[in-house]
Image 1: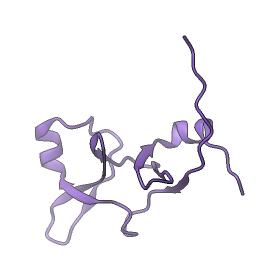
Image 2: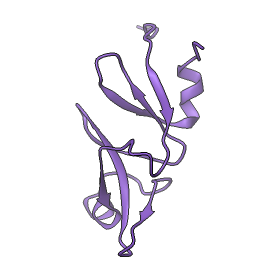
Image 3: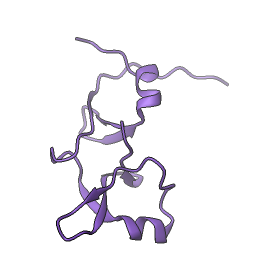
Image 4: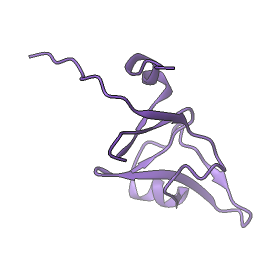
Length: 96
């Protein structure tokens, strides 16, 4: 059976480093060691001490690591998700 997504108004903003949009950071080496995600495209930030960290947001599915060009979607109930730039404009239409 096929389904059509319900219309749902959300707030969305393209992720930017240094704007405090993420819930936290994980050391890049730990992300790779634990095999959380494929490293390609992950946002990587080099801190003053030389360590490299990856930003993430938390949602009911766990920690979602941000990739270059990702949008952070916030639903009316405050739940946050991530949508890649490649899919964002297919799934969301501007209301303004």
